[in-house]
Amino acid sequence: MPIEHDILQGDEGWLKLRIGKVTASELGNLLTPEFKQREGETPKTYLYSKVAEAWRGQPLPSFTSWATEQGELLEAEARKWFAFVTEHKIRNIGVVEAEGGRFGCSPDALLDADGGLELKAPQSTNHVRYLMEGILPKDYVTQVHGCLYATGRPWWKFVSYRRGFPSLVLKIERDEEICEKIAKAVERFSKSFDEAMQKLKDADQ
Image (tube, rainbow, N blue to C red; front, side, top):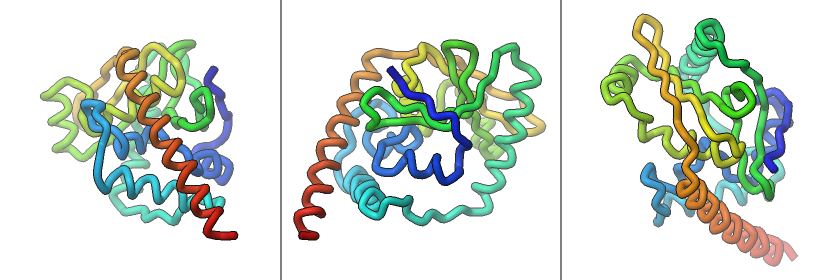
């Protein structure tokens, strides 16, 4: 069964829970939007970063750009908008870990008893593109399905919000074949992670 951690996203406890674990927002380092296993430097670099933070026992330093900060402010606005227009029961949660504790997600909210929410506030050009295409954007496919996998829930709402434009609201259904591919990718990563940690321990003796 998934484990829910009722903590504030972004605080110290939330950061520590993510150490050494694959998260839904980072799943694209292991799988393509078509859910094929990535090869090459991207998964290697991701593995090394996760091993490094686990060895240190703290997250690696990250750079926050002005655009990122603006996006976070707009996502807060989008959350207020969604809460105003929706009839869903909204519950905030810090982290949901999949069974086994090697994978987790930080939903923007859990909806009702069986759904969840992913909010994005992209730049105008991207928002219009999302509206024209009317499908879950490739940039967020692995993240949304990662949340479905971690929580065990059957559906998720994806919302793209931009002030002055119509909003895009999509309902994404759980896909068991995709969940199985995620599970295999996490298992493969976890094996490599454990082997790498053991090598560090051996070198430290």
